[in-house]
Structure formats: C-alpha cells, structure tokens
Figure (cartoon, rainbow, N blue to C red):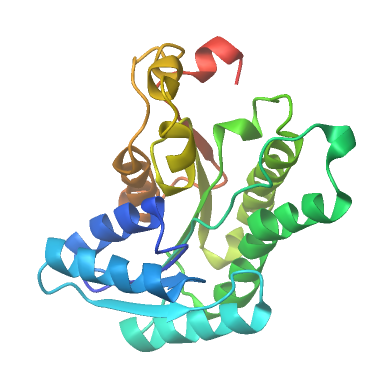
Length: 251
C-alpha cells in the first residue's frame, strides 16, 4: 500500500486508531477525521510515537454534515495526493431501550449517524477516486442478530450492511470496492462503560467459542485486508469477526 492515501472517519476512536496504525505502517498517508479535536490530537500523538515517520493529518468535523464531510475529503486528497481508501468507523446507538419507549428522533438520529454518514462518504468521495480504490465500513454482528432492547442499533447496522451491498453493485462499473466488517463484542472505546462493569468481560467471553472478547486490532486486520489489493476480487461483503459468537446465536 506504499504511497496510497486513506481517510478514516471516527479516527479518534479505538477502531479508527487501530486501523490507522496498520495503514500507516504500510506507508499509507492517513487523514483522521473525528468530531472531537482533543481525541484527534491524542490519536495523532499516539500514532506518531508508534509509527515513526508516519504521514498523518487530522481534520475535525461532523460525519453527518455534508459540508464537513466534503472538507474532510478535500483534506485527505490534499494530504495524500489523492484518495484510494475510505474507512468509515462512525456509528453507535442510543443505548438500551424498549421499542415502545424509544423516541422517534433518537431512532432517526441513529440512522443518520450509522447509515447517513456512510452515504455521505460514498456520495462525495466516489467521484474523486480511481479504479482499484476501496471503502470499508464498520458494521456490527448485531446487524444479523436481533437483540431485545437494541432495536435501533440492530436496525441501523442492518441498513449499513445493505447500503454497502447496494453501493457495491451499483458502483461496480467504476472499479471501486465496498465492504463492511461486523465486530462482535470488542473492547474498544465505545464499549468501555460495559467492560468496566464487574464480570462483563468474563460473561461475554463465556458465550464466545474462541473464549475471549475482541480487541480493536482483531477488527483492524480484517479492515486492512479488505482495503488492500490482496482483496481486489472482493466486494459487497459483510464479514463477521466475533470469535465465533454468531455460531451460537444464529447470526
């Protein structure tokens, strides 16, 4: 991947940092985008210490704002001399809540955050990318495993999967690939509150055939492969990386 250019949204988070580290180590010029400038600064400092000579740029903005996403794409192209890889890690949900108690505006904001952010990246970046480029999105194992009191998160991640597949077939004449990775229970920034609870990690690991929860690099390695030329004949795929948990839930 030496000499390529990448944009990683949600770049200040656990997945974003791990993915960026692998890309930077391969000589990719990486632009990190996030809505939290402090997290971006911390991520840049961390990655610079881990990958000496890394080509890192940062840009703050809202992943659901068309204007901000356009600025981020412009910044990535200016930094890397083009744009070959786009990784969308932005996502999340309103937390636990019953369907009958979930406010409509929260449901729709979850949709905008998870699916809308991916739509904007594809809409704005694709026309400026060349044949052989790729997109990879962070979905969730919840996209295929319905969970009580998580209807919003499950629904929007399923929507992200289908958006990924739809983009892959519609935009295939451009020679650009679109894939997603579905993490299982992974110890990343967004799950810190859960892993801080006594017994959570052990309880989660007991439900996983490989007997441990995930780490950000477990997910990052799958993203790295899908973004690379080694995966040049793979598109429209949503890979579950969950230690085999879906084998027990039917996901």
